[in-house]
Image 1 (cartoon, rainbow, N blue to C red):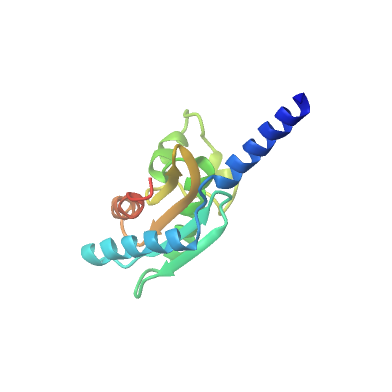
Image 2 (cartoon, helix red, strand yellow):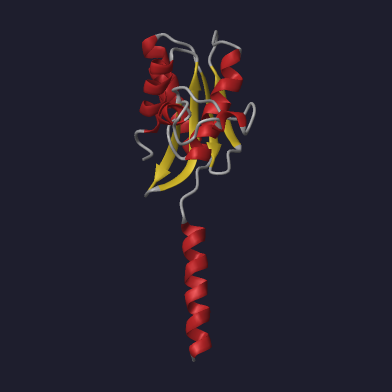
Length: 153
């Protein structure tokens, strides 16, 4: 009987993990649509990237006339937000000389991007991915990214 209880507890734990919400293509596309909507409103063409909890690209969208550099930057911002589970705007403050994460940007060359526009996608306190926006100022990118995920968190 004791083995049966242990097996049931393990099965329940596994089922709980499997039920955890994941960031899929449909939600990624919804966030991209919201980001594009705000980008159009502020008249700044942007590149928008969404990654899963492992930093793997789920969806990418480049608006007409957005900067070519914004492609890689948006993907790096999304990766950084997911990897650090915080916004790139907040992470940027932690990499300054004397701060806790000083030098972090040098540990993953080309992967971390530490200026505004990347935000983690959180559900019930758990990071399920990241969104990166690039094309405007850091403030514009941040505003668009935060608007795009506001219905996900």
